[in-house]
Image 1 (cartoon, rainbow, N blue to C red):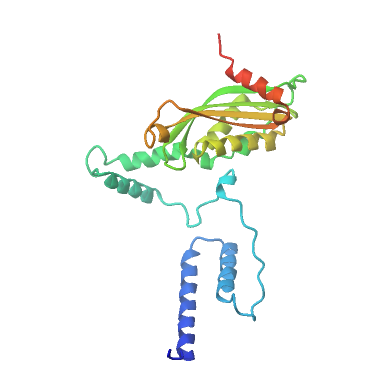
Image 2 (cartoon, rainbow, N blue to C red):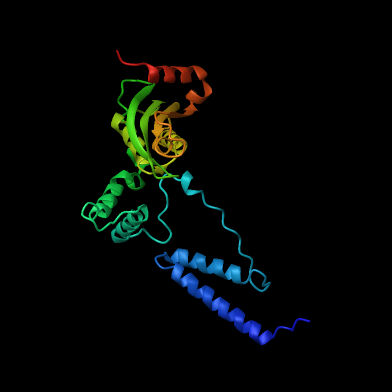
Amino acid sequence: MYAKPDSTTMKARVAKAGDAMDAALKSLSYGMSDDERRMSAVGLQGMRGANDPGLPDIAPDIAPLPESAQRVPNEVALGRPSRQEAEAAVRTLLRWAGDDPTREGLIDTPARVVKAYEQIFGGYRADADALLERVFEEVEGYSDAVLVRDIPFYSHCEHHMVPFMGLAHIAYYPTKGVVGLSKLARVVDAFARRLQTQETMTAQIADTIESILQPRGCAVMVEAEHLCMAMRGVQKAGVSTITTQFRGVYKNDPSEQVRFLTFVRNQKG
């Protein structure tokens, strides 16, 4: 026979557990805005009183878009680590790899890596939409396709943090005007200088051009070699991966796709 639980003891345990949850919430809310704290408090109340008919029903929030679908990812919930914390993480990786971070050749490596990461992953601080906001309308009635090909880029695979690099080709049919040619290259860099998959990067470039310039059509092709395939795993060097996105007339008219691919593949002289 099981002994009947003592109701007074159980109430005390529940109250103690509730205090622990409150403390955990306060610790997690460090650095949150006032609105975020209020939402967290509502969420905690809902968890603690899920089976309490005396509490009002709380309508569930709509699930946010995954970060991979956002052009500029939200700040990390717990805050961005300091430079000192980042350098300490590099020293940890050096030790894990089997080397001594205090030896002469490596003593300044953590600082160098963190400084390099600021440039390599500078795309997180770039506003790709803003790059295309200035449009030149005085183009003497030009309405044919504009194509910029062979835009070099360097990115990093989000699965292994190993580089992949290649060329991007972009074409669009202007409606309201044209943008500076360098702006298209900057849009490529804005997305390449992040942890990426090639497929996502290709779609992000096309999305930005389509939503900001609102062209009659746009086409994006990215071809790249992934070092995560050459250096590790199957270890096959020289393999190219090609991804494309077609919007507007490029999507609806196969002849426009052929024209775009012909321009991209047409070699000089």
